[in-house]
Amino acid sequence: MIRILNETLKKHQISVETRKEIYGDSTFEFSMLIDQGEINDMTPVVNFYKEEDEKLYMRSQTFAFHEYAYGNTHEVFQEENES
Image (cartoon, rainbow, N blue to C red):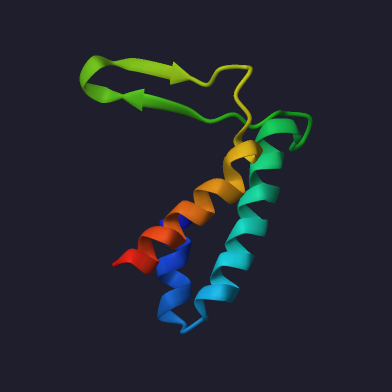
């Protein structure tokens, strides 16, 4: 998700500092919605389906997306600086 938005903002010539700030904040808020939010009396969840195994992988109840929002953003932008 971070890489997709980063590439979109690059196309619009948004500076790396601004991209990192925008994405860190929006990732955190989106993650909080997944971790603690409600939409029309329903809680959003993220699961993954592996087609070749026909398995659904559900997230652990102890995992919190928002705890990784800024760290993952930093990692993507660190990779960009190294390339």
